[in-house]
Image 1: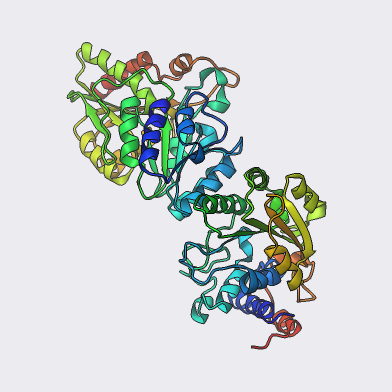
Image 2 (image 1 turned 90 degrees about the vertical axis):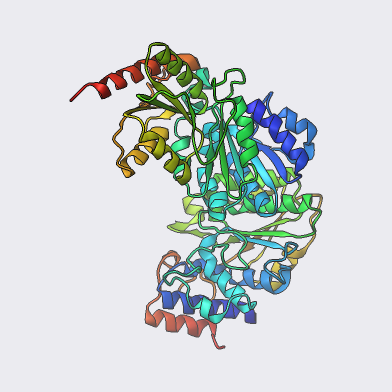
Length: 263
Length: 311
């Protein structure tokens, strides 16, 4: 497993254990996506550079994975990371723009893609080459507002916009195909005139290739990343419980062992 | 009012290329003045208000001043959480234009009535509400507020012809405008319904009542202080708003009175409840809900009689 992704997973486990909070499975699900984004795709050398690429974590409940990626990028020091879910912190369960490196505060699903479309439109109007990335969950596509934004981005041919779907097939109370199926997801995006590509959401080469390839025919791009909820910790994988549940001491020790977390 | 607003917005857009206008497919015979002159900065996003506010949020964060346009309930209630989480939380220069307060969309029925917007927008910290009373005040209010740092909500009437006599377009973000010098009764009004309140006040004056009219166009702490000073001079006050009775102007005035322990009797005119399936012209609906000039006159007269009757 890639070193950065492994470190993201380690931080997710450490911090969620220390803070005794859940959303662990959702965060582990996107560890590889964020490792590739921050390691190989996003051009974000400085958080205050207007010409940097933009990134919206629309599935805000995976913020811990984003904090981990920012920490490994050198944007967030150890002390700040250690305030995750402490009183008075800026590092809550959901991300806030007050933190350098976070472009948009999320937490309510269905908001991020439209804002990202606004960024993409602004970039075009300002003749900028900056790219805009938004990471959504598959269950987030239950929100009608997502489809408003999907239609908008396609109509306006926002070729500088890339949506990434963390398609782990799960949501808070169960499995997406049982609760509100959007299968086949890629076909639905294609029907809205997006350039959709499905990849293994834990394969870094596939992810990097899909996120970096140029737009074809003026369509905005979507990467449907097939992921495993709780990826890397066998007893969490595909288990609904780990959407909300925090870890016991034993579970924590076992989880760390499974991801082979050394520093 | 909306046409005057959009003409002035077009003038501002000529000065500042950050100004954009987005509509969720509404504004026939209103948005054209802007769209024709600045087609690159006009965007009909389709019937999708949530996405409109989200896109405006992204545009504002990256340097634009987007105005988003729809009828009051569609501009405010449908995308409310997007307003809250976007421009309000991020303190962005998104401007929301809601057209048609109260019953202005008369025959269109309850779905088009703007009866909750002042209440739900007033609770959002950092959002400036601008609800002008007539077309002249609209132009000045826009000029005074379009560059404000945080988000702004403009509640605009549709009528371009009626004006509030004596208002003369005056707008001050930190105080209401007092018209007249009567001292027994103060009628306080907000938005386009102020033209009805003004007629009621004129009639009361003719009848010998010592009455003043105050036009409120915005709610904030500074204007609350100013209003408190004004209220302290009157024994009796009547509020008038084309809005549900709770949450808007009348509630705000009640807060000002209570927090400053003012010895003034308050009577609120507003909509209490809509009867299911009962609709009609704006004039009809206003009268039905106590908001015609005649009804306001009668309510104010009764309130004054009560206030001056020794207990």
